Amino acid sequence: MKRIAIFSFIALLLASVLLASKNEENKVAEDLMSTKESLLPSNEENFRKMMDVLTSVRCINCHPSDNVPKQGDDSHPHYFDMRRGKENLGYDATKCTTCHQNENNNFSGVPGAPEWSLAPAKMKWEGLSRIEIAQTMLNRENNGNRDLKELEHHLTEHALVLWAWNPGVDANGKEREKPPVPLEEYREAVKKWIEDGAVIPEKLDH
Amino acid sequence: MKISFNINGIPQAVEVDDENTPLLWVVRDILQLKGTKFGCGKAACGACTLHVNGQAVRSCSYAVKFAEGQEVTTIEGLGTPDNPHAVLLAWFEDVVSHCCYLQPWFLLATAALLNENPNPTDDDIDQNIINVCRCATYYRMRKAIHRAAALTNQNTTS
Image 1: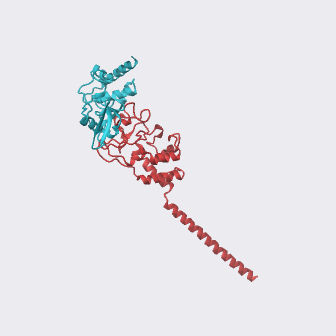
Image 2: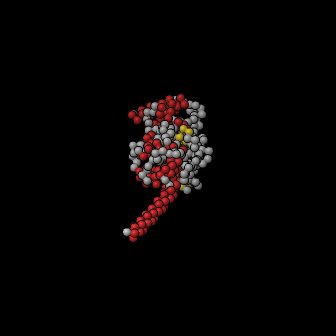
Image 3: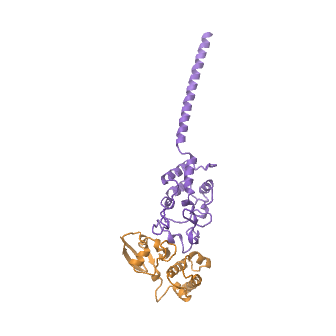
């Protein structure tokens, strides 16, 4: 009887040691996972970087909510009372392309890029919060019926969007402000955000 | 560098050192067509307006390289003395011009507008025929634009 009690005690001790060791292993694995995750940018960080760009004047100036394109780093209404026009390209004879060509003109300070135009009225972002912009941007009724892949292409490859990082000089020869995130970092953030399911954070701290 | 285009229906080839030279300076200084004016150099005043393929552009802000293979029209090519453009006739009829410095732009802008919109309303005129006439001939211009539209439509239907 005494012998059985001793065997049981030893077995119990071994089981406890094994269990503790297993728990320790799990804990180490969990710690490693969480370290790895904390090194990767979170969905919210990717979203923040993308939105730092999309809410910059270089993007918002051409996504107005009132059919009036905006100009300059102070987003003033476009001079000469220029408006959206019938097809986002200005009026019948005084169009965007009357002044804007396929590239910046550093003599006159007139900016230019391929397909220079205002974003369609459904893509109005001016005055919206970051979350509202993301919601409307993902809504195919408002985004030109783009799926996520097409949206990613527009955001990261479209020459008119990329112009923001090569905005040239203004009429006074002063360099226009670029978006606050470098192009490659922005591209990476957009791609990761979309790859991770294009999840819009429920609320933002900033 | 050689750039070739048609100007007022005539083929031209010009040599330029810099392909980004504004078309305005090529037209005025190389081709000696002085009707296209320099105003602000910022694509704001419109004095340098001419047509590229029938569309109004501000030539002070239009690199000559973009003119390669295109049809360029200046005020000198808007009709002929024997067969003036309807816009010119209307301008004479309504005695629009005063100092004349900026009139070439208004004439070319009006011709471009009538190409796109044969019956412009006052709103269409306000939206498309913009910028400054330093002699403030705006009311006479508005009358002349309606007259030019009527003359163009009359010529089209007759």
